[in-house]
Amino acid sequence: MPVPPMNRREFVQKSAVTGAAVAVAGAVGAGSAEAAERAPEHAPRTWSFSILGTTDLHSHVFDWDYYTDAAYKDSKGNSVGVARVATLVKQQREAKGEDRVLLVDAGDIIQGTSLAYYYARVDPITGTDGHQGPQHPMAVAMNHMRYDAAALGNHEFNYGIDVLRKFEQQCRFPLLGANALDAKTLRPAFHPYTVKRICVPGAPDIKVGILGLTNPGIALWDKDNVSGRMVFPGLVEQAKKYVPRLRALGCDVVFLTDHSGLDGSSSYGDELPYVENASNLVAEQVPGIDAILVGHTHVEVSSYTVTNKETGKDVVLSEPYCWGMRLTVFDFELELVHGQWKVTKTTAQTLDPKGVAEDAEVTKLLQADHELVVKYVNTPVGTCTQDLSAAESCWKDVPIMDFIHEVQTQTVKAGLSTADAALPLVSVAAPFSRTADIPAGDVTIRDIAGLYIYDNTLYGKKLTGAQLKDYLEYAAKYYHQVPSGTKVDTGTLTNANSFWDYMYDTAAGVSYEIDIAQAEGSRVKNLTYGGTAVTDDQVFVVAVNNYRANGGSGYPHIAAADIAYSSTNEIRQLMIDYVTGKGTLDPADFAAANWKLTQDGTPVF
Image 1 (tube, one colour):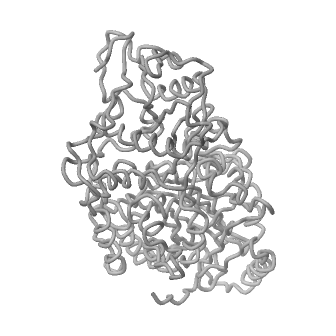
Image 2: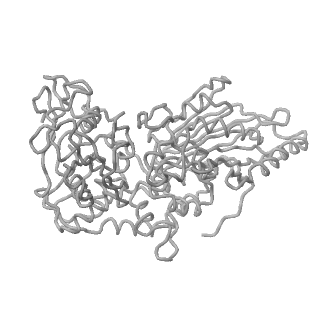
Image 3: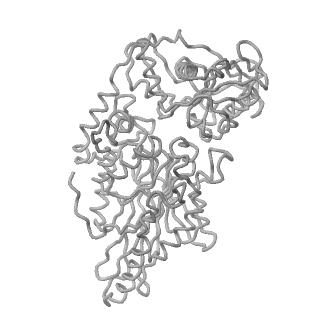
């Protein structure tokens, strides 16, 4: 596509990576003073502008679910995809003026759908065998929408740094990560910030500093891709460094885009010294911030105000859900005081794109890519002897989960050294999707992708019997305590609002019960291997995905455990290969009910 001409507010980009920040910054500050002196008597004394925000788009371009091969549908009637968001953005620009609207994203762009996988692995944007790769559909869409900046999300690193760098090259806007540092130099590995100008006729430009912060959890979740190459300090720590710098550059407005939630929580326990969801802490502890676009947690927070402890100033935060389901609109009002623009009011709201038409140009640009991926995911890889559903996978041992366990177990078993081959083998896996279903008859790539929705790779790690029990006790926190004699309601049984489905691991290879009548920490009963009680000093090889193996969700022992096996192959692809190799997926080959829920020893189901 041709590059559109720069408009009057095109960014002045500064990067500590290039070493040009200080020189350019001086010019920006000087320009501010000169413009103030030149401002005529009749110059506007007030002005307004908006920053539009998206987050966690996860490569949702159109309102389509590749796993069901149909338009996206959920219980709340939401629509997904940047194609509809693009229409809302166009409407905002038309209503407020092109030079009064900026567009920013808070990360997790290039992973999450079959479209994302296709352009990372099947026809990768990095190219193959000397051939140049295609343009990433998200780069095409976001360039067309004229994004001004985007923060790095943790899922940006899932396919490795080479894919991320290629995506960065294809974007006509900077990917920001002030706390993504080169491991050796500790200098920013990406642009920390960018400065944009809002043109005010007859008055000084309004300078908007946009600082991007990503998630420290990348160091754990994508350890295989970033270890020794990048480090990720905390958001508060880096914001304290860069917010004053933006103010020193003469920025009238400081806006943050954080791939980090706003409740101060962390999913990784004490594995890292930095908070995962720290946007509220940044607002509270770092003076000089006007507003924060929040991401990572996939919730809608239309507007949330935090008071800075040092200045007493209110900071407005907003998180626009995920997948393009919402668009945040930050509105800023400013007043020119002694030649300097001052923010007098900041508000935020979220807009719902449901019901608006998809942007015709986005559709034109990406329809062929979309159709190519639809064809790919509908490719048959084998057949299945019966319908396998995940609907009850969160409280029952169902065959569809045993399919995952079988593939993980057989893969790790085949890759163990002679010394470890004699050790008992256990598999752990989580029910990622309650709506997953592999039908009887033809099995397609999308059927399997709908069951295993993440691009995880496989590990084999060594745990003792005592550690394995601790691991399963941690998983059992997933359930609310339900006293004996009390009817179990599956609608309220799980802690899914705080200990989400993807965090709950079941195990195969051992047998056990989870007594939901008991308190947390005392629920795992009758843990046996081969019919014999597991002993504390018994050593197991545990087949586990890389996210969990590196400390994801805070499970005990596993991150520090010795490695017996590792692979760069995605588990999803291993499952596809399993079906392709056997021709037929038959639960008789792998299904085994080895765990169950009880109340004081009495089975719940």
